[in-house]
Length: 196
Image 1 (tube, one colour):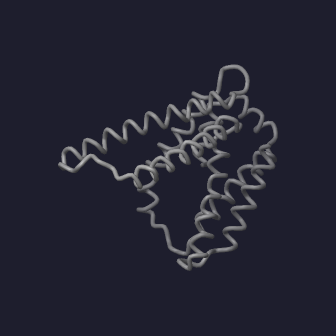
Image 2 (cartoon, helix red, strand yellow):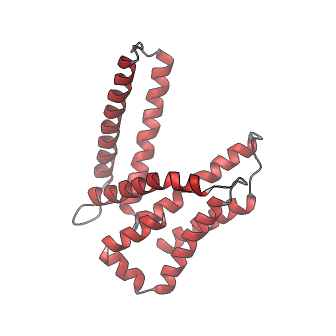
Image 3 (cartoon, one colour):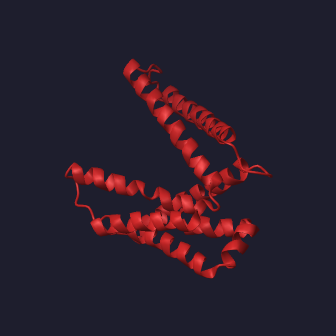
C-alpha cells in the first residue's frame, strides 16, 4: 500500500504537487494508511515472522505493479473514464486470465492423463464464481481508475479482513481483536473522507 502510494506520487506530478502543497493533508493521509497497516498487522494474535513477510514481498510488488498498470491503461488521456471503458477492461482481464488458466489447467490434466470433463454442479458453481469475480474486478478497476492514487484503494480493500475476522469469530474459529477491527474501520473511513 505505501509502496503503491509513493510510486504513484512519483508518476503523477499533479497529484504529488497537490499533496505537497498541503503537508498536513498529506500527513493525515499517511497517518490513515499507517493506521490501516497497523490494524491489519494486529488483527490476529499470531506472530508474522520476517521469513513470511519476505515471502509475500514479491507478490506485493507484483500486485502494486498491476494496480499501477490498470490505472495507467484505463485512464484516458483527457477526461474521466466511463464505466463502459472500465467494464471492458475487466472483461478483457477475465478473458485473458481465464484463457491462460484454462490452458494451464488443461495442459496439467493432459500430462497427468486426467479426464477433461466437468460435472454440471461444478460447472454451475464455476459460472456463478465467474460472474461474482467479474463484478468484483469491475468495481476494483473502477476504484483504482477513479481514485487520485491507487494506494488509497489498497488501504480501503484491507477492510475485507474485518469481514473475514467477523466470519471467523461467528464460526467460533478464533477470537477477534476488536481494537484492531475498529482501528482499521476508522482509518479507512478517515482516509475516504480525506481523499474525497
